[in-house]
Length: 464
Image (tube, rainbow, N blue to C red):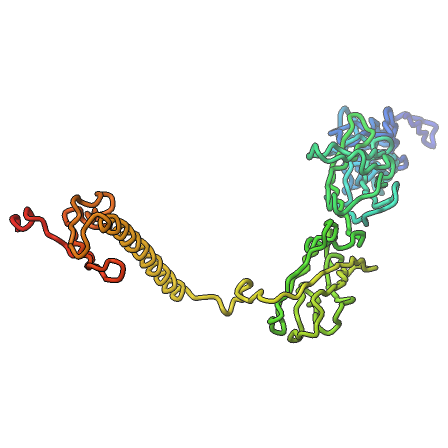
């Protein structure tokens, strides 16, 4: 810049003056976005959200700029070229935790005072199928009464999937049972949309008390993810079975008759009614009651075990034949019952030892003594029979010899007795080494005879 100066005398002169204009921070930074992605897939590491540049026409510190975003966000600003930045994800995002982010980019210069601008970017996190359906319980226990109506809703299983869209839509299905004998397809069905379980037919507790199976929940993502849960079905018993009498049999062609000795003491066990109930719990608890009897005061039945006993002594006036009607009843609601017919015949001579009571049973010592006595009696009986056989044989032989001998003479048998009758070499019979002297009186018909006087052979005397 030239400056002309004149004095009072009219003289002039020129000089050059340099003027420096000092900048003031009168311009705010500018931000220009060149690339922007509004939707970022979850689980994508370092995904680029935006590319932008900043500028400031001021000079010096007034034109120098700094950029920043919120500290708590999972994003980073990376400088690339001069005044160019890239906004990227710091780590993989989880849509199920947060589906949207509002990112504010702040650009400030270094002037005094600082001038600042802000620009907000909204980023949506898009879903991927990274979550399998999850059941609200790992296992379910469902209860259903037997004899249910078909198509009965017995329970609902539920699963959730935090994914969105088709990734979160769930389809329920039954898995094949581990037990190939279980006809699951004819027992249970499931609604594929809401997980409701409808029993297909009436269940019978006496046939099937409990069964279990697995249910699958599968989403509609690609690829599809699934999970399983165990379902345990308990069939509850209803009192749908009456007691069944095992003894005495009621369907036999001839009625069963119990014998009762007239000498029976009060409390004598006549018989015991045995019955069962295929139900369970209190539905199978049985009680016994005497309903009718030919002689009302003679018999009683124990309510809990069905034992029929006498209540008094029998007399001659009691009729010989009695008929009892008992009722066996369960404890269900409502209770079911069955009647039992008993026939009792009074007999004489049917003594108590045929039905021994525990208190009169012989102890082991008494049994051993009795056994010894029986053995002694048996041995004595055998010996006596043998001795009588020998006497009979000898008598027959004597009678035969007597006819041939003279009256009053003494005769000696000529031969030895047969060996199988006189051998005493250890078998208990007489030894064949002896003769016997048989002498008859003259009057054979009335006199006694000398019997079994041994005649020792000469050879035995010489040997001795």
